[in-house]
Length: 239
Image (cartoon, rainbow, N blue to C red; front, side, top):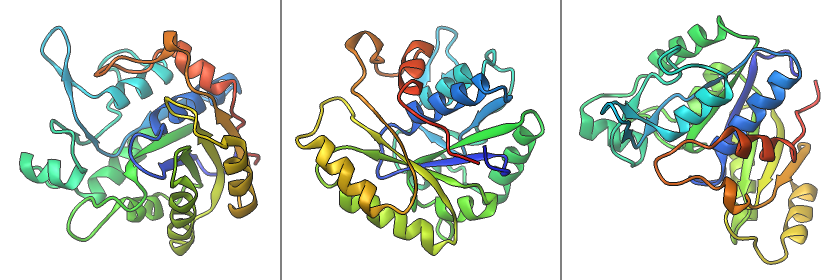
């Protein structure tokens, strides 16, 4: 692992598999002997558990992967009810998102483990407020970036644009991961080879489409079995 205290996981879009990858990376780090924890700066979209408590499926996936009991540790400083762009969901909830608050919450998590996997929300430049975006947060944390590419039509352009945005912030891309999503795209291998030739960072693996038995229902976290399946197809970045 890098000397940095973890990785920042971003994606080419929303719904490209950042949560699946983040959970899988946590499992791989734990298997390697690290106390690895997940962190989500902001989560938009909640469901209610049997007791009526608001939960977010991404945060609960990170909790499961981290081996934490419910309410054992705060993994997300901003939990927003509406499934929308975080700054808009926060505006509707009248709860402005503050970069310093997120950074302080991350620092608290860092005290609890050897490595933290920070899962972004949406894409790399999604706004947090009128002046700051997730790219600013990534700069503030200074973690190496792992890019998740959702393998679908348009992904090459989305991936290369995201790489340009990351590079413009003077951040290191520790590696990138292809995620096959729910249906395999035509010419998948050729698209991956194109990305390998274009992205100046190590290719860490391709996650096949999850078997039906491992696909998660709506408003539920990924199972440990699903995260383990994904982890089998990934490599950790080299130190």
